[in-house]
Length: 252
Image 1 (cartoon, rainbow, N blue to C red):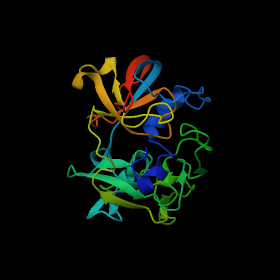
Image 2: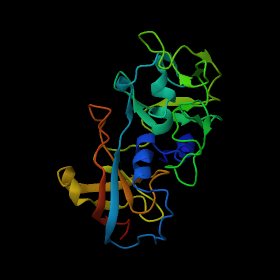
Image 3: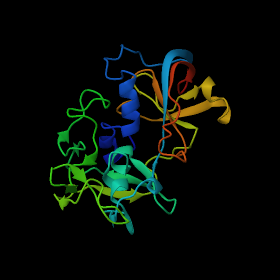
Image 4: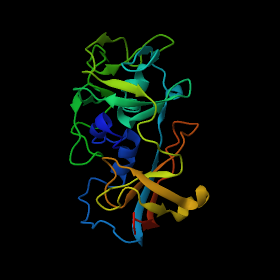
């Protein structure tokens, strides 16, 4: 998602959950050539997913200092591929929004601790999906582990392997998005600022959304609806295919 400065660099990785869903839908296939929408029109064969800021209450890691934020926050909330470093935005334990400010100069590793890099699209990685930033703790086998707040370790006792290359965070949201009102688009097809009617979301504000965001895994006819965090982390939200939406570009 492109949310300004450092978060624009984060957009090449997208959100882990969204990238996994996009992968399942074949998002790494070369998208067909699309022309920028300049006049209001219906758009068919649209895929719709959902995303939200990562809630710290879902995480269990030991609290650590977070450069740029007051107090301490759970390590996996900050540095795992389910947390703020990947999602771009999060909600801390006090209900305050926070976001990634600078990704620093380290990449990502998979669960085995091996470096993995994004390919031609955010749904494909060189050694599988990312698990943690390239820093933190590793167990005796070199795999990623982290200490729990209640004691113990996620994958066996670990040793510190180094910092996160200048990664920093900041209070507040990176963009002024609204739940069930904002949507991420591919700006090569749908201009930012477009109004979009999604019939499947009629129960949410009448189904009208504003194109305010983008993302590395949002390619072609793919919309990502910004929603409130679900109560259960297993709830990945709606995943709709072959939808028809109405797009009104700015000035169109």
